[in-house]
Image (cartoon, rainbow over all chains, first blue to last red; front, top):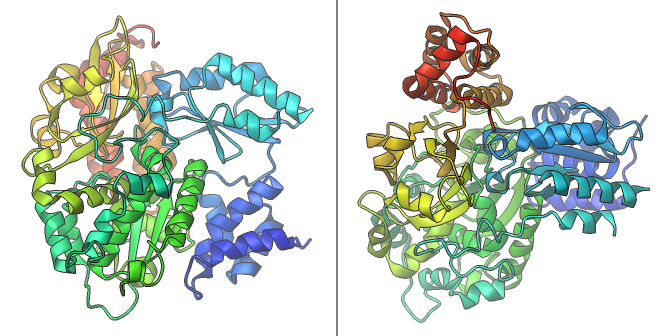
Amino acid sequence: MKLSLSDATLARFAQEVAKFPADQKQSAVMACLAILQQEQGWVSPEGEQAVADVLGMPVMAVHEVTTFYNMYNQKPVGRFKLNVCTNLPCQLRGGQQALEHLEKKLGVSVGGTTADGVFTLQPSECQGACADAPVMLVNDRHMCSFMSHDKLDQLIDSLRTAQA
Amino acid sequence: MNVEQILSQFQATGLETCFHDRHINAQIYAGLNGRNWSLKDYEARGGYSALRKILGRDGGEGLTQDQVIATVKESGLRGRGGAGFPTGLKWSFMPRQFPGQKYLVCNSDEGEPGTCKDRDIMMYNPHIVIEGMAIAAYAMGISVGYNYIHGEIFQVYERFQAALEEARAAGYLGDGIMGSSFNFQLHASHGFGAYICGEETALLESLEGKKGQPRFKPPFPASFGLYGKPTTINNTETFAAVPWIIRNGGQAYLECGKPNNGGTKIFSVSGDVERPGNYEIPMGTPFAKLLELCGGVRAGRQLKAVIPGGSSSPVIPGQLMMDLTMDYDSIAKEGGSMLGSGAVIVMDDTRCMVKSLQRLSYFYAHESCGQCTPCREGTGWLSRVVDRIENGQGREADLALLDNVAGNIMGRTICALGDAAAMPVRGMLKHYRHEFEHHIAHKTCMVGAYA
């Protein structure tokens, strides 16, 4: 099925394309895929095709980008995707424990999505906020710092309430 | 509360990492409070006066391109991204007379485990990067630039975009900057989760809209860079150092640090210290002083080991580290490691080095781009062997095997990720071999509980 993009989405794409030389539209592919993910929750094959059409590039070249970078969701995720950093600097300050705490709290194992489809829990590599450890990224665009167990509980409970 | 409001409650404020009074002679972080990032505030701190000066818009004669490059050479500024290459020299490699388009790129793909300094620069003082890039562009005759920002720090990317808008509106970017004939268009771009894109040619591939696999060098970016055009790439902190150098002179900058190691440097200190954070201090400051600024090792614990320059740099035992100073030469020549990006990962006496290496080796295996066989296969091999040692399934021959695999990666790959994976392994085996031997012989850890 063909995905038709809204004018608003196309306008956001155009802003990204405008940053690059006219014959280098492909440079906007990362940003366009990120926008698509923000709006649709993941990058579907139809989404890749739509981006390829807008940027005038082979869909396989778009797929290469989707599959190379860690943050693109190649399948649907929950309403909130939680990425907890477990790299060494975070591990030294409880990153692994934060991940395990969320496993218990949400009742899912790492990589899983809660039955109600609200949360997906994933580990991540370095997010570049090591002095704020433990850190967690919510839906790619919101970094949460100093995530003690108390703050994790508070965040999850608030998001659940807001979602309900 | 809506979702945005909820999430914003957990956003970093910079209070702990940046707006403390424990910097020494700060230049880049000086006078910041989290609210004064905008153009007006930056101008009030003397911002854009260096750009004004080189363009001769401050009543003076201005500086020629050669004069700007000579000043940066004189300053002793070395690349802050990890390699420590002399910045002025790099700028002199740009073929200024090249008739086609040339590009300037800022590497803000800050993903070296331990590093978070560029994030605080761009979030709380974004215009210093813009001004530094504009000066660099002027010096090398470049009219278009990109700042490629780590995908995980999206709020920083948005902040930098907002600063770009301000700079354009004020005439610091665009055509005919401050009434001169100098044109410079600058844009922000973002990654989306790939450590390898911090490697400069992988970054260029990514900026071209491809998977980020490094290019063979030579040709170097100065002759074949973005879209095949001459390109200069510097780290965020490197650009941020430039306005101060132009305002105060190369000699003054050099005098802030020590010979061959000019200026201040921002160190991201993480791990087992009381106050993790970013600390801007003069090059050559004793590590002991830096540790003191961080409130020392966590209460009740002793310093065991320090990874001094990001996860790729070989570990240094605490005792030796206490005798070193924080500059390229001391860490390399006396410590046998690298200053790298200035990410100081501190580990205390409750830490097991096998477990620490296990996590790092997993990281490199996960982030290898797969292009070169020694790295693609070798990083996985290292990770699996360290894994089994940690899990009590190590074999007697494993340490020789680790050394052998590391040796067969080093120097045999297109980019430095292979070396970056191998060096921590060799560093750990050099200084903490007994811990690995204990794990293999006794199937358990000798350090005790991993806190």
